[in-house]
Image (tube, rainbow, N blue to C red; front, side):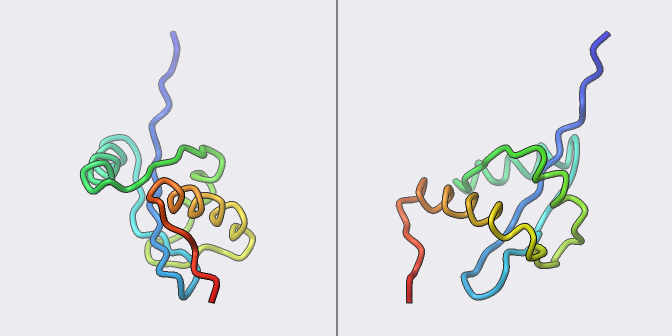
Length: 90
């Protein structure tokens, strides 16, 4: 019998001034609610299971650690591309 793994979700917020912060996270039903809200508000979604596992260990409201900057920057760039935005270069 195949065992289903519980879906895990982590939401980040990036304001452009400081490091991205973990704003929501959860598994199973809570993960599904977070995903539904993201879809409802046209927020891009990207699946990165290994990164999600690391981000899930960060407390809500905390900035991501420096070691994750590059991985998260790639996701932010992906989201900006989907929205047709560019990063400010000032």
